[in-house]
Amino acid sequence: MIEATSIDKRSFFYGQKTIAYSLFFTDRRSLEIAVHPDSTVVVKAPLDSDISLIEKKLHKRARWIFRQLNYFRQFNPKTPDRRYINGETHLYLGRQYRLKISHGQENSVKLIKGFFQVACRKEHNPEIVKKLMNNWYLQKANIQFNESLSRCCPKFNAFDLTQPSISIKRMKKRWGSLSDKGTVTLNTNLIKAPKECIDYVVTHEIPLSRGGKK
Image (cartoon, rainbow, N blue to C red):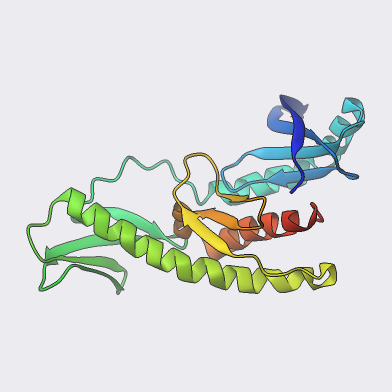
């Protein structure tokens, strides 16, 4: 993976709008502009790049950047902190489902007819429901993320890529990352986004395992 040697927080105007972006100067040959699902814009430029040429290219791609930002924003609604009570909505693969919490012979979470049906063997309190939901999300993430990897890897057959392994964990600020050993780490919360967003993140990380080929 190519490491950034410096980073700069910048912005530019396009009409009446301002686009903020993070600029990395790296040991690479070409300029890369990426819009992430968390609505951050990241620009990676060769070490000797002229800032005026970078901004010129950003202006040329401004409409595309806005389209990407608008696409991802629709999947990031401003919802309050979850309380894990009956009737509350929770996301899965871009869709919202309501919680139905009840007593049961065993702890379980099932997605049935538009509802998260959560059964608790003992008294159901928010902490128990939260733990059950988090475990369910983790199980589904393991399935969906690996399916996404299988969908996305063939796009890079020309680069003779070896399919990397996946690690899943909760991250506060990032959707995905790539380790020096080539392991793609994905944020558990990404399972709440549509498959298109999952594929976007996976596709963005895959090429980095081969020296930053895009």
